[in-house]
Image (cartoon, rainbow, N blue to C red; front, top):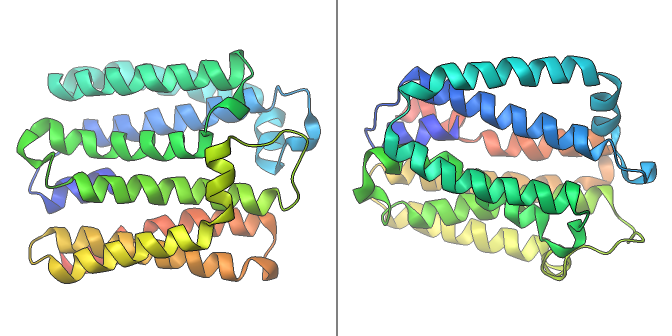
Length: 249
């Protein structure tokens, strides 16, 4: 959705194959990450989503195989420049998986922040690959989306780990966890300021970012009235704000 939204605002036409490839790749990475998490020997750190993936491992493995075949089929329809950028990003994501799941050094990497940066990068690649002149103009929005995606992960981590566990998070993650509300307010203020100052099509992009930051903050303020699984769903729902912009495009 974000990939289509960013491209549409900047008059960049994306083939259906690019959007389908994005959906398949993101779902595959998400499912693989959960399946690898479920192999962890410390079952007390696992949440309902991990147990669900573990209980339906065969189905998810079949889904990953199908998605991989689909990606191979869609690859020829993706521009060469976008593939180059995705290869660079893919190398970083592969390194992330090795550090987290193979080496077992999750505490040495600010995982939630890395996920936010990788997600935002993948979202903007289809647009900037087709129109490199947009790289600088879209950089503020890309940084704000990366911050929002990281905040999404950090809020979920904070809600699921109200008490510090045996394994401490990365120092950068721990610092961000202590200032979650303040960081979200900063993203909200910057996004709102850019919305007010922008007189072009990016006003819708900045408005969607501002609304997402506000929604995350409101969910956090109501965290004591909601169950963990509801909080997690609400945190992801907060990032669907581009849908509110569609009627105005």
